[in-house]
Length: 114
Length: 115
Image (cartoon, rainbow over the protein chains, first blue to last red):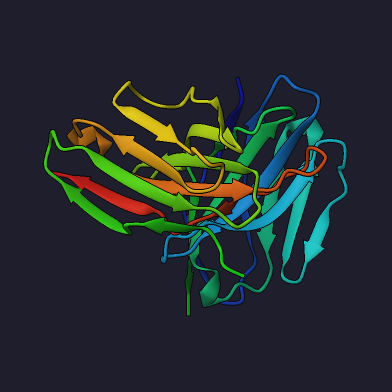
């Protein structure tokens, strides 16, 4: 069975601070996909990134970066120089190869204070 | 282009009523998913269609929940004899799988409140 744990339920930071959202996953598969989604107050889930388990390269996209470490089963997400518009709930998710079912974590609510 | 749309956006039902929630996926998307998101929780998988075939319905919580996608495009999630515990946001997502890599595009959801 697959499982995603986001231990931080709520985080508050002051604008321009860096913040890291933690994600730990469990799976028996050797091949799987990891995702991050953003859910702003409007409610619609927005896709941020997909990572294949064979690709452990870290990725940077603007102020966003992701650190994938298979050794610790973690896929952490860092926002650099946070902005008020980053305030949202962020979900980490996992899908095993061959299955369309995606398992989501409970989410981390990020509040960026101006 | 249009994204995933869902209707109604809000639905209030009295306990025991039947409800039908509609999802219009992105045109051409083969896969369609339904999720249930309770307050303060992450989305939980309900069911999955590939075209008109329902390939996985393992997440449907009871036989009161039924989903269909008869022509491989629009899908309807039906809940019979609604109960208070059915109150949640129901999310629909679609994707176009390509070589095993897939990202799901989500609709805005239908917020169901059972009174």
